[in-house]
Structures are given as structure tokens and as C-alpha cells.
Amino acid sequence: MPIRIDEIITKGASTLEKKFMGGVSQESATRAITETAQEVQRQMDEISRLGIEEVKSQNERAMATLKEAHLKELAAKDRENLALKQSNNAVTQEKNSLDNRLKKLMAKIQDGLNFKEIESNPDGSKVFEKHSLNGARALKTVNSNDVTTQVNIELANKTFRRTSYNPLTKQPTRTVTNATKTGETVEILYDDYGRGGKPKVLNKKKSKENIKPTIVDRKTNKISESTIEVDNLYSDGSKIKSEVDRRTNEVRNWTKWKNANSSWWDEWYAKDERGVTTGKRVWNDNNSRIEYEKRVNISPSGIRRVSPYSRLKDELTGVVTSVDRMTFPKSSPIKRIETFKPENSDSIIKSVVKMKNGTVYEMTDYKKVDSNRELRPGGGLDVLAPQKVVKTTKDGAKTEMNQEEIMPWLESFHPGYNFSLLK
Image 1 (cartoon, rainbow, N blue to C red):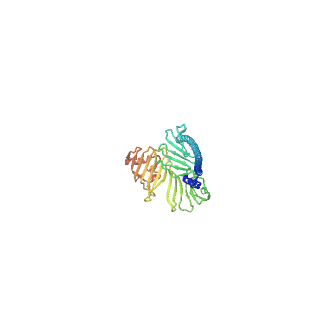
Image 2 (cartoon, rainbow, N blue to C red):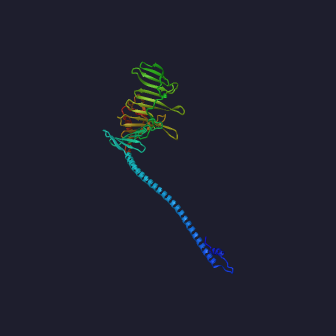
Image 3 (cartoon, helix red, strand yellow):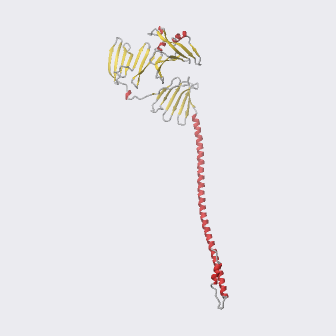
């Protein structure tokens, strides 16, 4: 606070001593002035001292606070800088380590993704190997012409898939794999166009239902001096009736019923001068009726006929076209003949002959014609024969065969071939 000089002087003047005759004494005036001045000086010194000490104290406290805060801040900054430096060093070190590992891994992956020759065989074939990112190991076998003949893929958990290829068509022919939902090993067979069929379980363990039934009753009847008939009743309720040639003990034919009390047989076998023929009825599980009968005949000359080989069902009408297939021995120039006809009918829509040289003949417009009786042992006088044959060579050129060439051409397919068997 500021010093009020007038108040100090007034206070000092109050101490003046008055004279009897009026006025103040010189001594008291001098003393009053002196004391007043000293008091002013004292208060000024006191105020100055207190102010300086207060300011100094406040400054000291402020400096101490600032110093403490600054030191704390510096310490925090130092710790932060040290942590950042250590973290940066660790990140840099990890990055360098990761870069090195990635370079090595990419080099290994790139090296493994490419097939490498691991084996060379005397016949000119070679085996190559590569590894995929999921741990699979692939082995590829190529022939002397560098055409793939087999690819085998293996996983660490013993899962495998092995596919064989036809080196001529480069199409798959057979696959064996255990990569199935049940873990069973299955086989898939492919047609000439690389289309796979239904997987077939291999090495399937026999269950109690698959145990071979035993004979519980047998009856033998003599038919003639050379033939006996044997009826066997089995433990699973099935029945087989057989005819045996007593001169050779050879079974000439047999018929099997899955249910001995059924009036419909299920399978049969016959052997005569036309070869060996087997038949099997295919039942419709939905209404327990016979769907169709499948027959397989192998002639003495080696011709194999499957009827029907396949059934083509029209989605709109439900009408079925039956396809019979006949295959020929290696010595024949013919690969196979496929005949298309309405199911349960003797009429023929068309037949397709595929030669081993790539030529294809399409036969249509079938009519009954006189047959060569010498080519039809035990046959009739007429057969169904195509009236139109179109030849397509491997390069796609098409020509139509002359009418007078058709019958001699049909009768020259293969020794012992009877084209009327296509019916």
C-alpha cells in the first residue's frame, strides 16, 4: 500500500508542545519533524523489504516449481525417446529378419512350384516332382514323347489322388483316390471323352450282410444221360438252378432268384456256340418293378456286346433310348459299334461305327433284308440292315457309301461277326 505522508505528519504534529504565549516550541517542532521523517523512512524501508522478500520468495517458489516440472518433463521425454529408440531398433531388426525369411521362403516356394525331374527310366519316361503351398506333393510321369501318362498327388495326412492318362488322346482314363467324405478309396473310370463315371469303392471290407450265403438245401434231377439239373437253396433266401454237362462237369447255364418264392429271376448265365452270355434284371426301387434287363455277351471270336450299355432318358417326355455297345478284339480295325433304339423295341434308330484309325460311320434307315445264312448260324432268313451309311474321316471329310457296298462291308467287320446281333 502507498504511504500517506500527510497522515504521518498530522500524527507528528499532534505531539507538538504549545507555548504559553502561543505557537510551538522549536525543540518540539524539530523533534516532531525528525520523528515523522524517520517514521516515513522506516515504513518505506519496511515496505520495500517486505515487497522484495515476497517477490523473491514467490520467484523462488515459481522457479522451484518450474524446475521440478521441467525436470519431470525432461525425464519423461528422455524415457519416451529411449523407448522409441529401443522400439525403432527392435522394429528395424525384426523387419530385416522378416525380409530375409521372406526372401528365403519365396525362393523356396518358387523353387517348389515348378516341376523338377527326379527320375529317368530306361524306356525314356521321366518322373517330375513339385510341392504346393498346402503341403501337397505332386508326381508327374511323362513318356518318351513328353506326354503325361500319370499324375499322383499326395498330402501329409496320407490323402492321395492318382490319375492315369491316355497318351494318344491326353484324356484321363482312371483315377484312384481316398479324398472322399468317408475316407474310402474309390476308383473312377473315364470314357474316351474324359467324362468320369460313378466312383466305385475299392477294397471294401465285407460286412455281415456281404458274407457269402451257405447252401441249406440241394436237389438234383436227371434230365438226360448227359445233363443234370441242380437246385440250391441258400441261407439268405436266394435260389440258383443250374444245368451241368455230366460229360465235362461244366455248368451250361444257371438262373438265380434273390427270393426263392419269386416268379421273376434276377440273374442268369448261359454258354453255347454263340459264346458266354450273362443277364441281370435292374429293379425300380420306387415301385418294385423291373426297370430293364442288362445283358453281356462275349462271343468265341472275342467280340463283347453290352445291352444296354447306357440309357438316355428324355427330360421332357421320360422316353428312354437304349444304347447297346459292341467292342472288338485288338486284331480288328473296329474299335466299337454303338446302336441306338427305343427301349423295349427291336427297331433301330441309328448305329455308329468307330474305327481305330479315327474314321466314323453312321448307319441309319434300317430295313429287313435277306441275310447270308453262312454268317448267321442258327439264324433266320432276314435281318435288319442300314440303307444309308455316311462315312466321316478323321479330318472331317464326309462321304455316303453306295448301296451295293453296304452289305459286303457289314459282313467283313470281323471273323465270326454277326451284324444281326445288333438287333
